[in-house]
Image 1 (cartoon, helix red, strand yellow):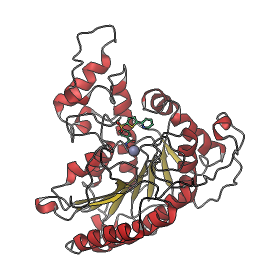
Image 2: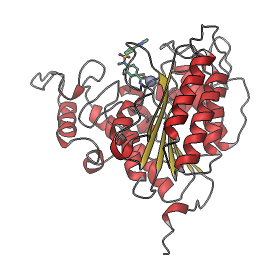
Image 3: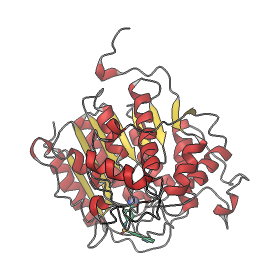
Image 4: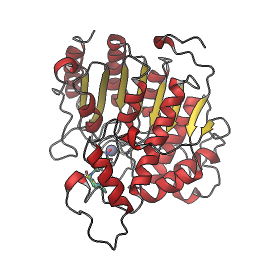
Length: 379
Ligand SMILES: CN(c1ccc(C(=O)NO)cc1)S(=O)(=O)c1ccc(-c2ccccn2)s1
Ligand SMILES: [Zn+2]
């Protein structure tokens, strides 16, 4: 059949692909750092009747070849062997090698979990490449800290990097936007030396806050100089200021970079009420950011990430799923298996806390000016 010129992959329809299977939810429930979050997220999306509007696509595990398109063979081999060992056999290497300790413990089955999450994100990316949809969603992906040969920050395999590498087989320029509370260091590291992928992260940046990278002056290296964009923020930021920063920086990035595809990591640990207790955002604020990206009408992959208040994370990703579908939702949480997660108000909306905002207008203006000057070098 006629090859579609790479720059204008036509979308056969405006379906929204949603990668899902019960087995996938069960796997994510048990092994991600937030037990039970996967089924709470899926349960609320289903309770609002949104799964009927989505094109559900079953995930398949990523192959070793796919995993080692970014990760080292040694790391993947070690993860696979360690994951297969029964925990009573102590001969596995429990050293900190490959980052497999503390925040990223070797749990039985962790390899199958990581391979399935990566496979789910790759399945979503493939649907975009094949023109099956314009937006594809994997809320259980977005593990942005994993490095080539090291697990980090609850992330074993960097599924956003794998997706971007796959999208790059079809699209000449990919824009990665990371709205998780934490800096998307693993994705930035993977593409810091190329102009073919622009990574743009809004995150908390403060002394001693994980992962410690994401300084505004880190702009990439060599051919990648100015194609790494970091927007460091302080505690307490609320929707209006966050959207203002996002809109100015991301709109300039899109207009000077002209990406052909977008990967958007929507970690929900910046929500008001999250145990991380840093930002003071609501799904409405992040939804305004999503609307800017959807308006570009580009192939767009939506991923999850952090989010440690299970109810608020489910609220956020359900509201964003409805927004992609163009559906408005009733404020009252529908009766369903996880209803009790949403007390005491049992409402979809999240009210911002009245916490101190350390982002002065002067600080935000300075950040925007520096980022804007850097982006002026991008052509
Ligand atoms: C390993 N760490 C990470 C790493 C990544 C994330 C993340 O969400 N990245 O997107 C969060 C914490 S960490 O050292 O900052 C923490 C571990 C546990 C933390 C915690 C747990 C409960 C309440 C507040 N903080 S922070
Ligand atoms: Zn996070």
